[in-house]
Length: 101
Image (cartoon, rainbow, N blue to C red):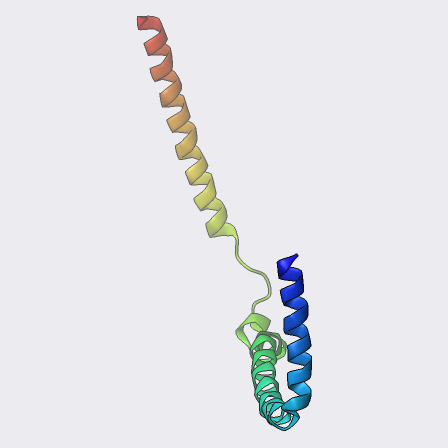
């Protein structure tokens, strides 16, 4: 209840303060609007840069037709074979441990 009453009082004082200090409030608002526009425009330009870069006809991404998966595919196959051998080795060790128990 105390927080609610304090919030109402703060909102009321803020509302009155805007009318009492209308001139400085408008000056602050007038200075903040160009700053927000500048920051928002810079952020939009930064985020749109990749999209524009992809649409350029001479970009590297436009020159690539299809990516080559052959080297990646062989790498994964070799890794899978390595893990299969490791599993077989561990199974043999487990069987030896069970046999000796």
